[in-house]
Image (spheres, rainbow, N blue to C red):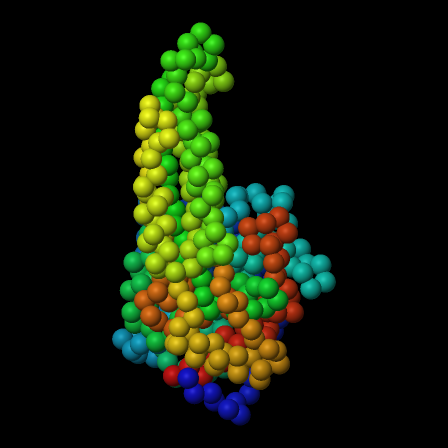
Length: 384
């Protein structure tokens, strides 16, 4: 991680960066709409090929879009290098651009669907590679960019490719958004996802209520037990986020299903909490409870490799003119969970600063575009 001291910090064009972000944002790409995601993949692939990147596009499966991998026009593809991770999918439905998330700039705030999480950061990674092509420079290590089509739902089809790419990386830079006032991320909780299916017994709610066994009533008891597992002191949170069941208001419900989210800071807690949730049993002996699922993303902490990478980035940020701080632990997951858990030094949250991921006021700070892209460029030119 030698710092090329004395090298000039590149001058970048904020308006050009924003124009590129807008072009990507205005191609709406909800995770479960493969055709929509692939329209953006088409655009990104074209941008990468235009600058001479070597592109591999892997067709999506299970209803998701394609995975896009690009190698810098320079460098040996077999050599271990720098892996940049971004994703092209968003949580927002088609039409958000014209209704709830109209693209607009208000002073330093720029709004749009998925602009903060994380199309701004994804474009900034491309822009950094383009900058080297434009200036005729190369980097000490080869650079690879991987764009994921379904990160917002846990990267179920692309995890294998992410981990394969990480095995050929010395460092991983994740361009998820900066947070809490332009801080990067050096530790993330692990994410678990579970589905509980409850079977009761249907009956007429008026004439034969006593014959029924309500699956929804059992679900209510289970929800209280699951939510009670939250322990802020240990960093464990549980959330029942989706519930569906019943067939009619006048029928004792025979079926109910709910989805459970788990966040844990350590591998040990991941193991114990997974066993605890999978071990839930019906409180009504006449109902049947089945739980499936497990850890979706492993947790990771700020190990020695991550700490060294962060300190290197912090020194570069000081050159640029700001004091880079890190979030000690965040509950949100990213594809960086996979790479960091493999022991590859991973620095996350290097995208645009802003606020409101997944929210109606999702936004980036225009003033963060140049310095944060400068940091990406400086990392690429100094990491060895």
